[in-house]
Length: 195
Ligand SMILES: [Zn+2]
Image (tube, rainbow, N blue to C red; front, side, top):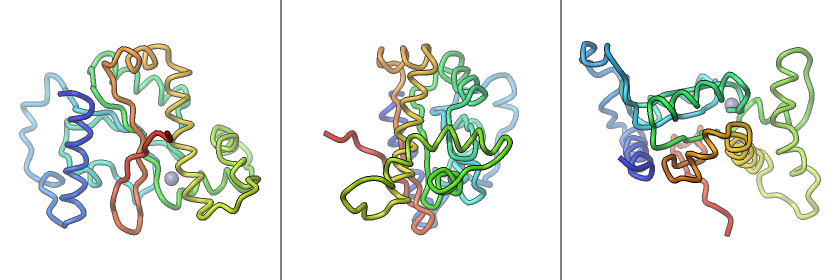
C-alpha cells in the first residue's frame, strides 16, 4: 500500500464516521492474529484531547494505525522515538500529523506561558503560532490558522529532528501529511501545500 492509498483509506473511514456508519470501532476482533506482529497502515501523531480519538475519527480497529498522542501534537524526543519505530521497523507508508479545532495547547501557546512541563510543551508550539497575532492583515480565524501553523511546524520538525524520517520522506518511502479535525463536524481536512 502506498502512503496516498493509506491516506485515502483513513479518509474513507472518516466518511463512515461522519455518516454514522462506523464499522470497526467496537467490532469483534481476532486477537490471535495480532499476537505475533503488527502491520499498521499508518502512523498518526495526534493531540491528547479526549474528543479527538484517531481510531474513532478514522473508523479503524486494533492493529490498523500506530498512534502517538500528546497535547498539541508536538514532535518532542519521545514522540520522535515512537514514530521512528513505526517508520523504520513497522514500515508504515503514511505519517499523518492530526491537529484539531479548538486545541487547548495551541490556545495556551498563542496567549500565555506556563510553568513546569506544560511550559516546555507550550514553548514547542509558540514560535510557530505567535506570529499570527502580529500579522498586519486581519486573520479571519486566528485559532484555526494557529492550529494549521502548528501542524505544519510539527511536520517540519519531524523531518528536521529525525534524519531517518527525513530520509524516508525524501526517498518516497514515507508520505508525510497534515490534517485538521473539526470538533463541530467530525470531518478531517487534509492540509494542502500553499502553492
Ligand atoms: Zn489539542
